[in-house]
Image (cartoon, rainbow, N blue to C red; front, side):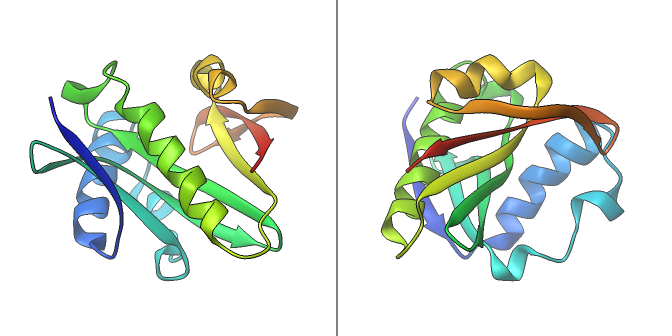
Length: 140
């Protein structure tokens, strides 16, 4: 399996991946998934053997890079691609002037995954689109 992860303007590919993972697999409503903020975000797209397999977006809020909409298609899960996507997001954020930390809202089942990548949970568990989440952050 050979993958490439790059910053992208290919929102159609990102939207298709997010539709598969969030709307079709996880039952998130389209209204919640399509929040109108993609035009202001930086996007990262992962391809496996040339085919889109995962993505994420980064919203900038002051000195914080908010990583979100992180998804990987089922066939590529467990391969390290998700961790590589997060590392790519951190690299993109580090290249932006003035950003000092990364933040994300993690589905609670994925807390240990993000902890292995240097994120620390804070605050209470909350509901996002019917899925329990917890905020996490790490320095850039």
